[in-house]
Length: 363
Image (cartoon, rainbow, N blue to C red):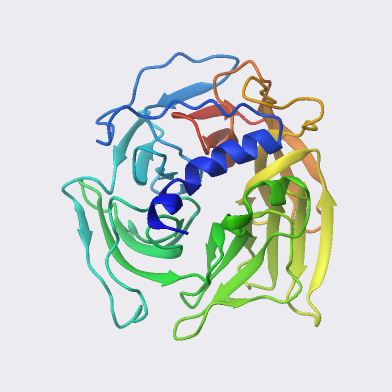
């Protein structure tokens, strides 16, 4: 696949997933490549408070005890990727990459096989994982598409008045991979989901066939597939602190899968759900959150005028019993929902193709 084709892959992701789940493929791309300087005013509706002006904030993560949220910014056909720092207290955000406080600081000792600095015109920020290694200091891992399919690694410093982000390396993923989500491991390695082979397109995901799996990487090693993790549209990923259990949301299979790495072959427990689950995140030490479009068969509802609404599910990590704790119907502005993050009694909602994030009360 050419670089120009890869730059369009993220846009195709949004359109393909909405079409596969009966949602709308109509998106409004920003008019200019310059990052937004401030949030765009937009009215609340149906119990949802909006923060607008972001580009494809597909994933959301809390930054320790700072009270702030890190949001991804997926590339589209006109614009490269972004990364945003959200302050829930003020309902404002800052762009972290396309600004004066961003730097390229390659760590060639830690990432010797990374082919070079980040191409700021041909990258995406898709899935996120963070590790706090000091007060206000975070290491950020992202899945990225564009000039290369890779896990890109950054340092984020929010300990001072002006946040600063520095790119420091990458791990290139195997050929024929479109990665979705990533979870950092305790030794600085990661696990990441291969959603599909981009050459096969989203028809392979919507058909429910096996399209991907989970990759693993450790410092000094190679990226390897974890045997027994083959899935349909592997999407969100979360790991327990002891790294025994891996949880994966599959958008093609409409499942949450719990893998137990203490057994050989790997143990597998499956929960089927009625949404197309996207990202999956820890809400507490024993509960997970996943969010996604309400599933409607393409035979019943498909095409650019079809919207499905969305749901947030809370999942017991031990039993995989799910409870709906939020959501909205097809009439609200926020669609293409991909993530839910619990902050206090609120749920922050991300979208892979919208210009906004939302905040709702957890039910």
